[in-house]
Length: 117
Image (cartoon, rainbow, N blue to C red; front, side, top):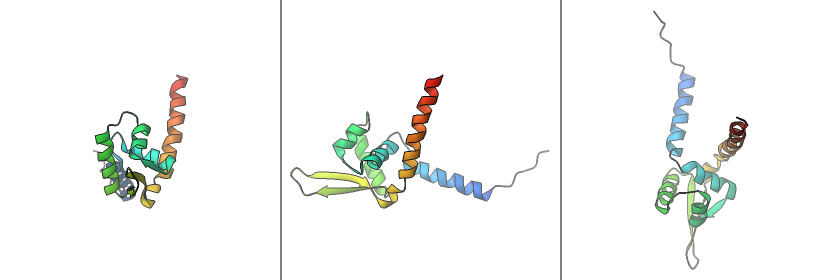
């Protein structure tokens, strides 16, 4: 007979927190959009289209709206002709900078590791 393991409340809390974060950041494009904004401070819609390879206009628009709803990105309409719209990280979104930079570093290391084989 095996003993029933009591739940580790601290571990459970960390797993729930990671699940919450992944829910907000899920999908193919959100991390790439956030990375572009992290490394470029602010971007126009067309800049983001160019930065995020193979994303469609419709998908970029959808993802930006979701990021706005989650208070990670802000949208500013400038009174220019034609109208200019800038996207940038909110203060809350800027807290992801460390995560994005760590992912970038890990991605570079991982690419090198895979090339070794």
